[in-house]
Image 1 (cartoon, one colour):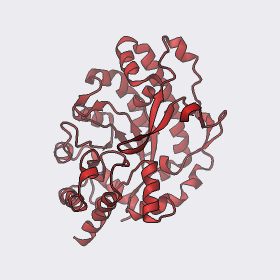
Image 2 (cartoon, one colour; image 1 turned 60 degrees about the vertical axis):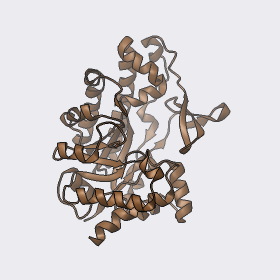
Image 3 (cartoon, one colour; image 1 turned 120 degrees about the vertical axis):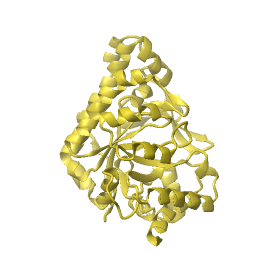
Length: 357
């Protein structure tokens, strides 16, 4: 069974030869791991960890043909991209991180202010050779990611301001959400028209929860997020592509809604959050949605010994071996506070423990 079939069987709750795996780490960690393992490129890193999935945002992108540069440097180490998001590299206890530092639309007061903003156009990207770019990854299950309807608007408006808009200025919140929704619908349809038969998963990231509960009420999710998210889900399904929703925190109250909307895969199962026990969620929704993630990056992986990592992996495999509906991965993109030895142990034990059994 190849990686593509293994992943699709997991999503469709069919038997697989082994639990599929997805390695995902930020670019600083990937660079460190390649140096540590003496590997030359991203595909070698995926192969080393026996990853069944490749996330295209890490390696394959359409050509930018829009005005100016796709990203450019401002003063004091600040970088701005074509959306106008402004970020800066900072050193944190977790290692080097790219953090948002300014929000260009935070001071906007009316919808007219938003209308006059220089919104990007999906035609700024050329997909004509995108299919050829996927050639080196055809042995893996391919995941297209980068879309958002709720979280990305906060990168221009600021989280506090945007959440306030949902209550006091809903017309402004909806205007921004519609701008992002429309852009990503057109952007990814261009991608799928060019190479949709080679893509297995469409991943959208919209964090709607904290570790102890939702960021917004269930009613606000239904009003503002669900209709726009449904458009993304329907786009994926039109091209026979599975839909993955990434949402950190305690999203347990919304899981039935996710299923009703048509979400095929829920990521990342942040087990350190309230009510997000991986096994309990699977028992409750085992035939309705596939789970992705669940290996804790917040406390466990940074602090565990190699032996403890292997023990956790064996426990997880023993539960899911005959269950299906699960893709083994971490509960967040791997960051710099996790020792390379633990990362190596996680993915190697996942592979070899199943092979030996």
